[in-house]
Image (cartoon, rainbow, N blue to C red; front, top):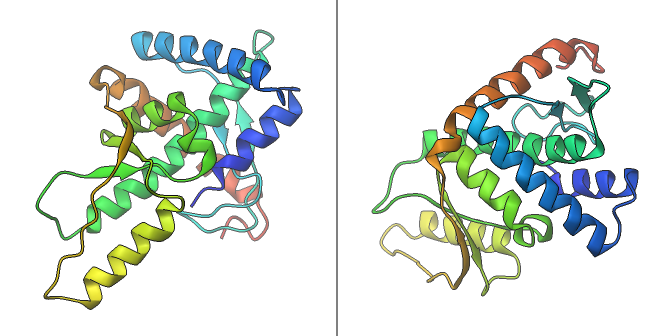
Length: 207
């Protein structure tokens, strides 16, 4: 949906964070920054993460990435934070569209993390849970969570009289922190404003 994993690969390459040790240390600093942001609801660097064009929700192949809000105090930690935050915001935009057209069900929504970048990054999953207000789980029994989810959805739609459900083997669960809601609302507005401001510069006027 967002090609989010490559955003992190780009940041790690740009700031020489290829080793596990350096990236882990960076994420620890990002986690501290995230806690401070949620407490103060202050905004930092805002990013449109379209380094390879936009997938959902606009599907504008001519879209480009953009970073706004840089000052002399901006560090690589701020940029890595902005990368994580920006992908979370685009995922949340997609999630809101999907839950908005859902026909409902017999329980509350649960999101199953899919993709190595998200599955292996607890902070990123927690940020997504806080942003969209939905529990995020890692299913240790699924190697291709997205493919399995789509297959189950199609199977249930094709077989109206049956309900195919497979139990999740929950390895990890991230529960939304409601204290972070205000911070994410502000971040979302900032990103949407940035995208609106720069989209006219994209190939085909962003259309």
